Length: 284
Image 1 (cartoon, rainbow, N blue to C red):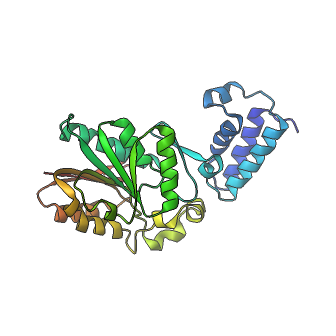
Image 2 (image 1 turned 90 degrees about the vertical axis):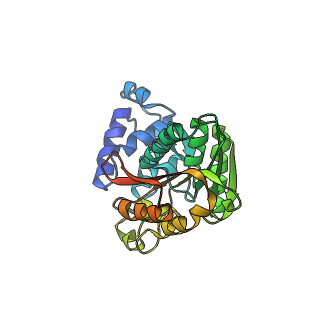
Image 3 (image 1 turned 120 degrees about the vertical axis):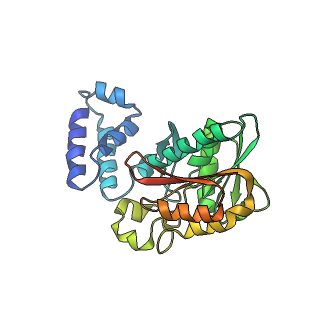
């Protein structure tokens, strides 16, 4: 069965669409199988695929249709232009989290003295995407990261080593591993999906991503309440706190932070799709 690249992609596109999956998944899977980038894929559309590669492609597309995330099949997700290994123990990094990092970096640059040694903590690090990116983008930061899942920490450590980021990893629940020190920057993308919304999640997420990284109690705000309660004990007098939030949680999370830090500036930032996605507090 000799198929050309474009024929394989056309088949995958319509097969994926028919099953309610993203039709671009075929391109990603074929680039991975062939070890090509997109420019090469598009320039070789008329090349005949070796049978072994074509069979591997068929199998990968069917695996994705059965619900397995593409990132678990190929083993990584791109984030801030770098490849992060992922598996079923960590949340797959999302583009919205890149926006969180951009917002934090802008404020780190404008709010703190560039020559000062700053301590940054990433709470619930998962794949390590936030911690590793912060360190690589701003080498002067001393970055620590925690997770309650030891399996997640293994992936985060592997990513930090592969990408050459020096991170101090700690195992523990939320702010517990950081309670004996003072921090300048605290970032977290905590679980924020209300438990009642489990049924409306896509099965790709529901069946394959870790529930302890997805659900934040009845209204999705449990972790933010705990943060608001404990953060005042661990941040410096001048500090920056940034959260990713679920769409429409902005007002409530901002209110929690204003109560915890009454004399500070708290802002809600909207993502590229116009949804409230980040709550950022500048403490002084």
